[in-house]
Length: 330
Image 1 (cartoon, rainbow, N blue to C red):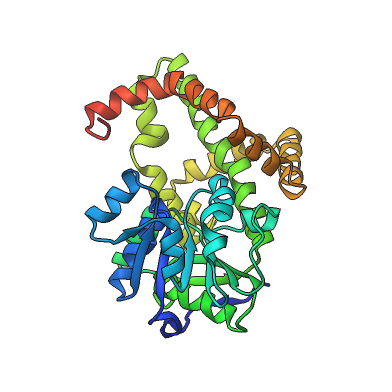
Image 2 (spheres, rainbow, N blue to C red):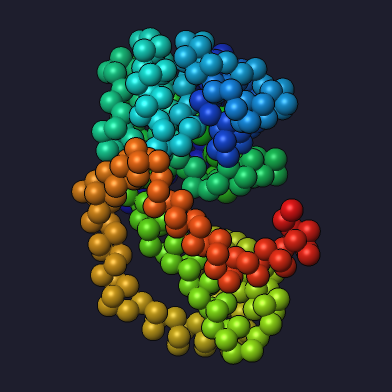
């Protein structure tokens, strides 16, 4: 069993300058939480819409090299695929001994795309939810789970710093929060495995279910509201988190329970099991990471084509019309 932590001493980093590199979903959420907690936060970013948003929210924005020089704690909140280039160009040359570098995922350190120097602490604090949830939970005085890991313990206090930062962003020290002792390798494998298996399958299974309902005379509106647009999925996933994967079924009608339990296993075929094992094989041996790195080098041709295909699908087109009518999309 993994070691669990429910609190930490955030006073260890209270007087440090925390430089958030990148102001996207996680970067902005964590920066806001830290500032609300009284920490000294600055943003390192290129001049783009994210830098403008940070300034609009009252943050001081520096170039990435300057932010690294000024910060005691450097938080890597830019996308995985651009981190190696930014690291070599803007971050590593400006690191000095004794700084603390925090990664929000294990990806680049585990695969060796980034090789930090030995004279800094290298820590992972990886929230198990999107940035919006990190911020919303903080505002509601709720904690959230994070995986923590240490790749280099230069100071001898790296694990303590991991817990201090976890508490500073609101993950632990609040109801429902927990820090799970993990590693850069474990976080990468589990995170990519979810993205490559059930999470992606879930989206495309719903889209195909939509097509089947339409083929059988169900209106687009009724089909979409049944499958995802009503928000019922949010209630179900919340119940799973609070009650357990199968225990939450007790909150459904007995007809629903019987349908879940009889039909659910049929979709876990031998081919699905084979695909899951193939996915984790490619994650562990670095095949996917090399593929994704090449995709970036080539200008994202497959990535862009796949998005074009999704946006041309019936599910996307019908959803676009309904969501505009409901005022959810411009």
